[in-house]
Image (tube, rainbow over all chains, first blue to last red; front, top):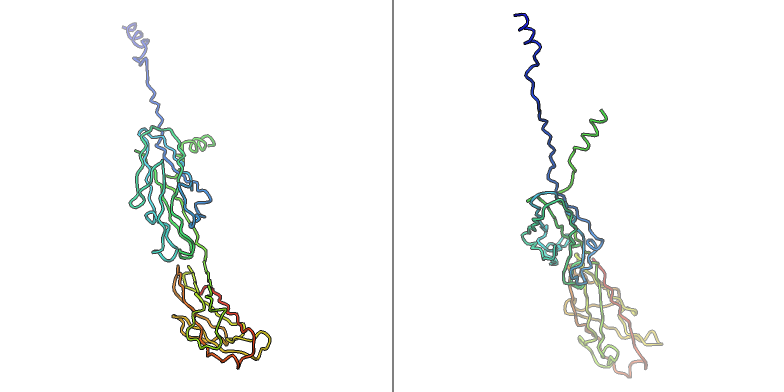
Length: 151
Length: 153
């Protein structure tokens, strides 16, 4: 009887012979956009016609599986507007990814390319020059906004 | 502690912007321009014949200023055609335009147009004087120089 007890005590415990360690890392979605403007963007010669003149570059970075979309909008719906007389304005066309942008209502540009990618997209402007004597003196401005988001 | 801090820094997401803007701007400088185009009559005035709004020039003024422009007109001889060598021999005259009416140039005249540009206006300039028989005038040329100066208001 004593022998049996010793045998039981000597037996190893019923321990597992394998185990699992969960390992996981998460990469968040990264989408970013940065615009670098050229000097001409803020010194536009309004009396000289411009034909797809480069005014800046949009640098877009993403790592998303389904790509990204970029929305482009204009504060003045595609017009350079006088600082104090809004009725005095100059229409212009913005070109992005080889397309004219609809600045009246804004426009999305979609990219299905899977990340990780960085793209430099030129921004170009076109307008018909008007003699200074036919324009009201002052500054004519617009603000174009580019917003990037994951698909 | 340092390791923890480092780990936190490495684990932090990159703060990248998802929106950016492009400012577009062009500047139109002030344009103020005046051009006086004389007619033949301006330098062949028949001094023995009275002139009433004799057509002597077209005055073209341009401006693009927000507050408009003013034109100052001055006469070298105070509104008189003066003999080339006998300064006391003179013929008084006045000028007129459709918008300004008739005015003398005994002193500089200023005409303001507080109208926002762009404007491009041409006005005919007329001269008025009373003709004097030649035998009552000293022989010679009678001249004056009228200067038009435009500036912003």
